[in-house]
Image (cartoon, rainbow, N blue to C red; front, side, top):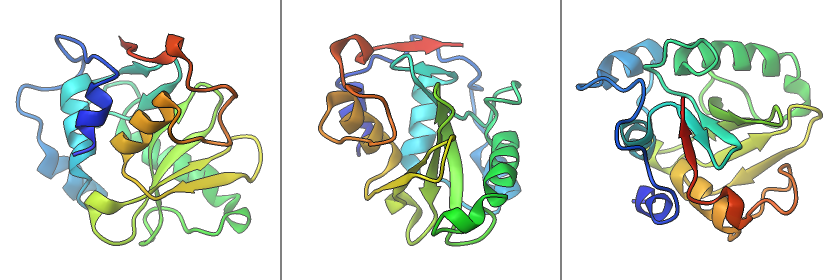
Length: 174
């Protein structure tokens, strides 16, 4: 699993924030009407809420913060992007296949899964928050994060140079 790639470069907190002792993923998935990728669930369990590499936030369905909570973010982000839908080649959640947000970055860009095929094989799409640029990555969320932070994968929407040593091995819990 790709989470192991990420754990080689980023140390999770000893006690992740906003993660219940027994996360009720079934309730989260029922509310969304779809099952989420396993690497996402493992990431949330290991890291909780926080900022990865001083740049990326992964939404947490157990967060009380409306800007970090997965369900609230899915609704608000999809509403915003649906207004721009004629500039993207994909539909947005709840359409399937569609773009389902899982995080954002400090530059106002959004991170999505493209919900096509098996959930554990959903590719990542990064959409610019300032224009109609997007980039598709044929890999899961944690593989994408690990490989962008090591510089193996380049996201054209993110600042250059992105994969610098100062960003690695940092996770700041909220």
